[in-house]
Image (cartoon, rainbow, N blue to C red):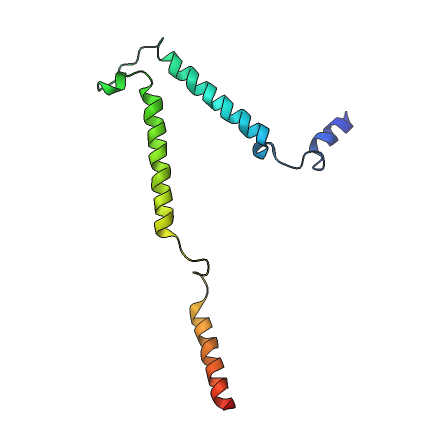
Length: 111
């Protein structure tokens, strides 16, 4: 029994965490799609009373949620492009300027 526990925790046999393995990701996607399909199919059995006419449409919640998520992703991508900074943005610029001044002064002294 100790050997089985040791084999499960051995990183050499299972180097990747379960959440990053392709088969786990595929299973999570299939499971999520199955849950969403079941929820949309349950709308045929369970009556939903919406406040507006569009709320009463079959599958409105799923479509609305998907479109909302899509819009959020697109806005986030746009903000990322807008707020992106160069890779050397956080370098200490005054220290670099001081070094350049020191080099210029050393060159003047050498001449």
